[in-house]
Length: 361
Ligand code: FES
Image (tube, rainbow, N blue to C red; front, top):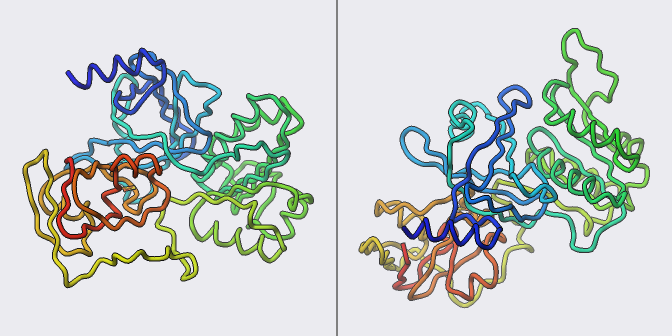
């Protein structure tokens, strides 16, 4: 009943909220083990988000629900549908389930959109998007958005793939680039496809290639997304080239490794392994003893209480819960807004109880 009311509210407002499930409307194969899933809102609501943001999907895999965070590959300039492009890696469970079982007509729950990896509020004149593998999705969303805006912003799009057949959404990108001179595409592959000529770049992205591809890279806002070693290599390359790293943006779905100087200054409350704490989950009527160094998410899991979670390091916002009493020590990575914190919300995955805490879960 509550859900129904929330769904009607979403429809009245005209903008989708995650109180409403997503209805899968199409599945398009992109490459091996890779597909784009598009969704509509059953209420007819439209989608509002920033290009580059992500969604966390609740996936009913055998053995229990998993929450997986995916960058939105569609553009908010096309608000009737929202899409994610996913690639199943060896051993992946949630993404594999999507590729094998999620078909048009099915509904799934989602949280978001969220994330701060997006175009700057003040539009820049020139961008350099660099991606590898399935890290292409935010660049794809941003490029589509800039293309749709039609303001002729200069985009140099560099994507690295193992083989030509692994390049995700290549035709969509080529279609945009064929229509406007402001979008230039460069694909770099490590291996050729058998029996098909590859006339593009080969090897690994390096300083020489960047100079040839975008000689004016110093003037460009750089966005990078891909596997962690790839992004490390791009960062190091740009630093070595003397690029102003204030204009460098990087997306990551693994826990950031913080250097000592980046660690937050601790306030006067530091969780202590020797000190015990109590977390009361009011809706479940469960109270659990723990250490001050345990996260609220871990305490909930041990007590058999399900709090949805995705990244587990404070980025995606999936584990947001309301704290109704007590204090926690929270060190997040941007997955919660100041307004939410002021309203009493915490991220369970990166909040540690201080003394007695009560959570609405
Ligand atoms: S699970 Fe992603 S912020 Fe907690």
